[in-house]
Structure formats: C-alpha cells, structure tokens
Length: 288
Ligand SMILES: Nc1ncnc2c1ncn2[C@@H]1O[C@H](COP(=O)(O)OP(=O)(O)OP(=O)(O)O)[C@@H](O)[C@H]1O
Ligand SMILES: [Mg+2]
Image (cartoon, rainbow, N blue to C red; front, side, top):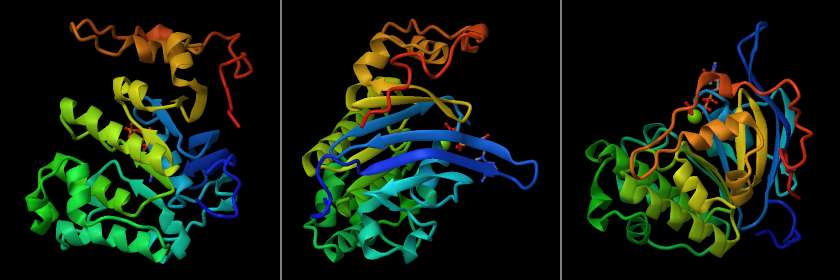
C-alpha cells in the first residue's frame, strides 16, 4: 500500500467506463460501468458469456482504451501502455488472464516466469518468496520449475500464471476466470488461497468467474453484469439472499445443486420488467 494513500481510499475506482469495438458502427461491449474496490477486498464480476467482463478487466488495467470513463488505481489513471513499458509502481497491478497461453511466454521455463514476478516485487521494495514457494502456494510441485509451458496441462499453466501474478506481491489483482481450467476440488482451494493473500496483504481483487459457488465463498461483494452494464451489486450475502434484478435471480437459480437438480432459467425470466430501473434501492449499491 502506498504510504501517501489513506487506508480507506479505494485501491481501484472505476467510473462510467465505456468500451466500444469496431469503427463507425461501434459495438458497445461495456456501457457505463462503475465500481470501487477497497484494500483487502474481493469484488466478483459475474454474468453471461459476452456480457463484457473481460473487456472491463482489460480497460481497468489499461490494455483497452475506454471510449469514456476512468479507471483510477490509487487515484491515478492507469495509462493504456503495454504491460512491459509501464512505470515500476504499476507492476503492483497484476492480471491473470482468461487464457494462460496468452500471458505465459512459451520459451521461458516456469521458474523464470515466476521469478519475473518476484523481480517486479523487489523493484518496488516488496518482499517476496522463491518460485518454489509460489508453486506450492497454488498446489503445484516445485519439480515443475524447469518445464516450459507447453509441457504443462492447461490447469497447471493456469496455476503458474496465478503463481507469477502472486509472486509480484500485487496491490491490485485483476483475475479473469483464473480458476476455470482447474478441477472442481482445486478451484475452491486456489480461490481461497488467492483471497487469503489479498486480505493478508491489503490488496484488492477484481475476480471474474462463471463459478457462482466459488464466488459465494470468496467475494465480499458481487457485481452482476448483463449486456455491458452492471445491473445489480452489493455484498455477497445480500445479492444471494435478495436478488433484485431478474437476471440475477435467473443466474442464481441456474447454479447446480449437489444433488444435480440445477434449474435452467426460462428465457422470459431474463427480461427486466419495464418498471425496473437501476434506482431500485439496493439494486445498485456503489459502496464507498
Ligand atoms: N477485440 C474485440 N473486438 C471486437 N469485439 C470484441 C473484442 N473483444 C470482445 N469483443 C466482443 O465484446 C463483447 C464482450 O466480450 P467480453 O470478452 O468482454 O465478454 P465476457 O463477458 O468476458 O465473456 P466470457 O464470459 O465468454 O469470457 C462480446 O460480444 C465480444 O464478442
Ligand atoms: Mg471473458
């Protein structure tokens, strides 16, 4: 945490973010998204495929230039620079990408990839651990240190990407489906470990996931995205217990139960009633 920043200020503050793709007939993938994440807090961003979660994440870390709106990291804009040309302090922002193949360098061994994260931490004056520690932290054997990414399974690659991000001792983690390639038993433990590290170090995490059962366990707050907008947000127990937007209700109803009795939402349930607006009390709870 920066010595000059009051502890109660958000680590990440996103305001009116708009991301569009294409030229003149631009398609608006993110349509005015706003949220804050405080120190040691996990905000989950959930929603159907294509609703704009990854686009939001990329704009937050400066990989996508927003059409409008701002993403402030500790009060400063995250410039749309390549990740390698960023100022040293911005290595405190770490992203775990949806596809680990796009973030791991195929020609560099696992230990060196994780060591790159450690170097970033040390350059900012943060303590970090050896690659073997971070491999163990994500449930991998240190024996994998000398492998290249192509010599790993998809789930192992995803864990290495998480290990590298954590080795950098981030102050803000933007994790886009970080556990989707892991088997069910590993998903909960890796997610819990990510949460623990965040809480312990006072880092903030934007956690994008399709897996609502994991979200329920690890997120302090949930923001539900639908067609480019956040249609509902609030503390995780509140959203679970009292979903306000029809899409949230449908999403929660679709979670498979342990007895296999998952209920698929009926299509009409996805339509918001004409009376619904984002001003419904409790529907959009912009904390802080
Ligand atoms: N680079 C791009 N150029 C054009 N359209 C894009 C681009 N990236 C994403 N899109 C479109 O923007 C919309 C939002 O995509 P995005 O990847 O943000 O969705 P998502 O919520 O992350 O979905 P998923 O859960 O499947 O990962 C989609 O319709 C997608 O096709
Ligand atoms: Mg995505």
